[in-house]
Image (cartoon, rainbow, N blue to C red; front, side, top):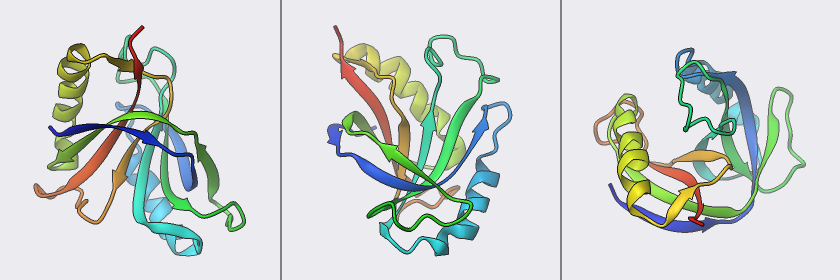
Amino acid sequence: MECRIEHSAKKILLGKSCLMSLAQNKTADLWRGFMQNRHLIKNAIGTDRYSLQIYPPNYFQNFNPSLEFEKWALLEVTDETEVDEGLSLFYLEEGLYAVFLYKGKASEGSKAFDYIFRTWFPAFDYELDDRPHFDALGEKYKHEDADSEEEVWIPIKRKR
């Protein structure tokens, strides 16, 4: 899996969120609800969509598929002026990320995360940072298509 280290600038995002767990995955419902209102967003920057996760502290150290986290379906916007009913703003602060290019079906993404957390992290001078994780879903994202591509952004910091 290709990886690059990148500093992300602050972003203003607009979309929908919900609480879920991997055991009670509501991703399809979240995105369906967001896409129904996507046309209301007039100040979007580009066409990339963002799937963002906010995990509680120690989520990965004490992994349990029933633990809840917050998930967002978002678009980046130019400013805060165009907030329509049913949508909320999210401010993604700047920070350092390991960016992995994932190619394949969305349902097979667990293999990529296994590589990231079991192989990549132990071999490099970075550790997981307690900030939002996100996936950038650009023009090449095709959900369950084997040729689909997305960028997986994992928040990192230098090991102490």
